[in-house]
Length: 106
Image (cartoon, rainbow, N blue to C red; front, side):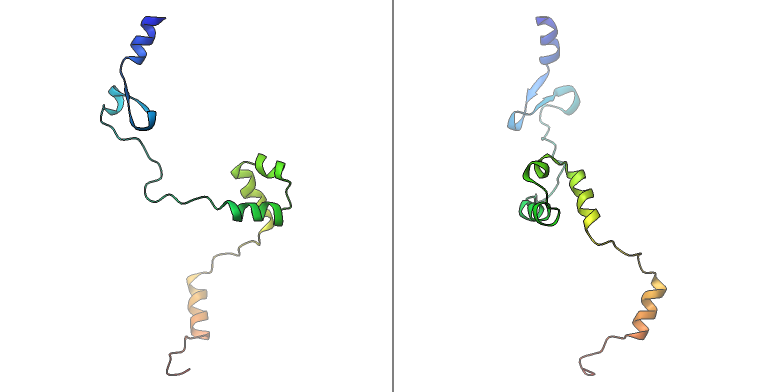
C-alpha cells in the first residue's frame, strides 16, 4: 500500500492555496485555474432574500434548502413574462410613427 501511495503522490507539486497539481499534467509552475476571469462580484443576497421571503413567501428552511436552479424557476413563475422580440420591420414602423424630436422642435 505504501509503494502505491508513493507512486501516486510522489509527482504532486504544492501550489498556491494548498491546491495540488500533477507535474505531468500542468507543469510545476502552473498557475491555479480561475473560471471567473476578471472582477468577481458579490452575490446579491439581500435581493435574493427579499424575493424569496417577500415575493415568494418562502420559510427560511425552504429558502436555504433550495438550489439556485430551483430558486430561478420559482422566480420565473412569479415574474411577468417577456413578450416576443420585436422584428426589425416593427421597430422601423414605430420609429416612423413616433419620430424623436430634436431640441429645436421641443
